[in-house]
Length: 491
Ligand SMILES: [Zn+2]
Image (tube, rainbow, N blue to C red; front, side, top):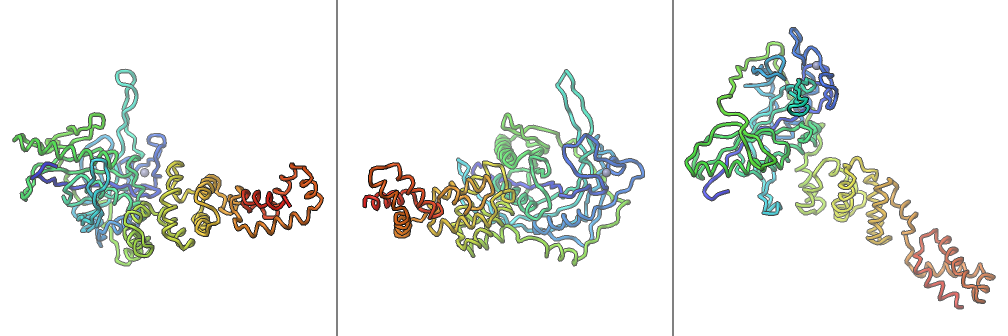
């Protein structure tokens, strides 16, 4: 950012709560179905149909709120947000306005600027004030399909109408695009972690908007802000914010006005462009929804939800650093998602070697997950089986290259370490005295063959190797066996 300037950025995130059914009716929340197949009089907005609040929305809303440091409010009020749009059949959206479901949160995120190659320079904690997370229903979708000028048609698909959303709104606390980037990633992981939302931006169940303005450092007033919308990935969002900061600084310096407007990220041309101007700003005429009671949530309910929540990722990261003596970087990567973190902890505990376990998890295991597109909980290799491999490596029974080969087979087939090691003949008895004893036994019990070999029948050498390998159950190091046999058979 140009010297002497700072950005002022506020974030709004719409997260789809991971319920099986919609917020005010029993229709399934599904993607990919036939258009308008998951609809009923309530979500079609037919006259006289009445909304009934889905209880699971309260549970998942509370989980989301607690994971983001928000206070769940004792009473919240649903309100009608009035506007006209084809994908909103009622002519209003049921949302919350002056009494939201949760409010007043402080969230500590870790954030870092990035160098030219995109690497984090220094991770630091930063407190973000989250003003509120309210509950609302999603609208449907206007779909435009076909080829321009040939077979173009549009229709409204109301399968998404009535899908539950939590809208999370921060104060304008961010000063750089990377802070906003790290915040969205933090929120995304937190919501997935507690099972509140799938939070997948590509699937549209996490959507962000950024409000961006710039001002000279030291100024306290805000300049006109631009709202950035339709950001399909966290990276595009970061790029869009970055572009917008530079664009606005240049405009201010040239004494050109910065219009208060909504802009989109144009991925092809790497720039933002106008979606709509301020003249379109709505007066939503909010008023309390007469068809729904105020939502009452008791402290007992909140305590109960809290008691069933998993340990949150940052707490877990700090505990990993403390208990297992891991670096900040390793511990942060291990808590990248919940099943991965839990997988690690099981391996660390059973193997009693947290450092070696971390190396395996962040090395081979991550490599296999990435190339197979699996998550930790989809891995055929259980944490117990990987722990067994770690123990075997630590005991020096197989070497590191063998262990990698064994693990690749374990990951592909789900076989336990011992089985693969046996199949590959890797678990070696490298102790020469143990092999010497076996060789001596074999020679002593094969007098006739020994005599024949010594008489010139070289082919019998393979017989002796086979006997020794059999006696060692395939575990003798073949090279050591060969050396000892040659030596002993000379006689
Ligand atoms: Zn419905």
